[in-house]
Length: 601
Image 1: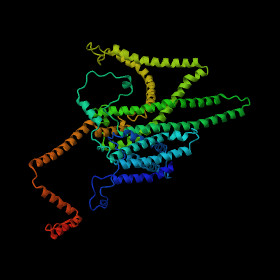
Image 2 (image 1 turned 120 degrees about the horizontal axis):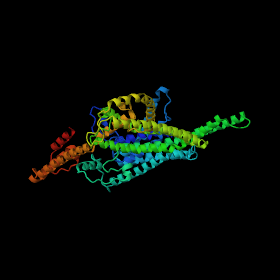
Image 3 (image 1 turned 135 degrees about the vertical axis):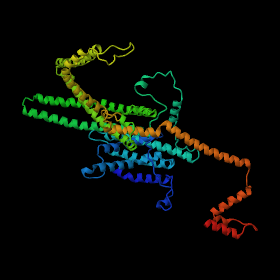
Image 4 (image 1 turned 180 degrees about the vertical axis):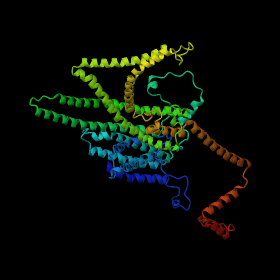
């Protein structure tokens, strides 16, 4: 597959050249430029509009999904086309990323090209080549040392499914383009400036709000509520699809590594038993060896059990990211920036432009690293539960465990009770009464000041000891929340004032601002009204002049107009002059000579 990736650049470049030749440039070169000979051919191909594309969203998403295996190779740094020193590995990864992107460029270029007939044929052929090579890879090397007989199928079936979808999509494009070419269907108009859901959003803003709102269901309240006036752009759909497939591949790779480590641990356990048996003729194992064996067994079981909750956590994060994207975009459309830190209210334009390119790749990397970190944290929590609750019961130490648990719970309860008691005493004795019966709380005015000062003095030394536990709990909670939310790029894990240090959150905010400025329905509707009004005014002027000419009648005779058109035709096509039949008495050689001279000039 790696060798085929290198050779796939040849058909990829060929497809890019063909589509670039068909693409027209809007501005032609000057006559003194060498590229003027190319005319307006060889325009720049856009594989995917990363800002504001709402058509073919799932097709682009599946095209991203077809690159999942190569993305995982890049993520693991296993794909390195060149052998260079260690300090130049960053350049090698950059070259590898460009090569992977160039090899999959035809998928996106053929989907976005306006020349549907040619692009559908080229895209279908290229997808068929990749599909055939992938099937050949699975058939020739089906088994592996970790999963077994179907290891290649386990790794490559998402790519096969994506390639099958692309084959069907390109076939559908070819049928539609062929029907248009044969005249059986009308040509689809160019991409509209204003999308349907954007127009519906503006209409909803102009309507009066309905006072009696419909009661939402549990699914709409807790999980997701569909909004017909909002659509996710193609970039978000592609990012989520690729993140799902990469997460699946990452879990499979992790499971394979676990199988390898488990076999090594089993071998180590067998060696330990053999060593103890050889050292002790009775064959009994020492307590240390028993504890090591128990640790290995517990760690293996906890690691397998926590795979499911860790994967479900990351999957829920992917869906939650979509919900947060919609919620944040709607708030920005409404002019609400209070949910953002103060430092991000006016980000620089350059940072936002770079963020739109960073976000998709960083989101996938955050999800993969987040899964691994969450899995490790959940495994540590599982080990604590096993050694704190389960194993004591297995070793007939349940009463001791319950005693320690009861003492710990009682200690924490007493500490929390004293903290709550301080608040109650302060509210009851050290604050003045309410100013009015409708007030919810007492005013911040001290009462019984002498008792208050003695209360603070005697609790000062106790709060020093209490602060030690509060500091440790703060550190523990920060570590747990930080590791648990590491995959959430839409939420910063830094403290207030240090949000700039969170590069992932900065990329999220920059991406939101770019989409806000380029896909705001109100702004797009305003531009649509301006462009439509300009076109209508030009059309009205043309109709007006045509009607005036029709009402006043022709200023010249039809014969004179025909002769004038004939003269223009002969000047632009001088060869027709020699082929015309001249009647006797009409025309002259001088006129023919003049026309030929004018045409040469």
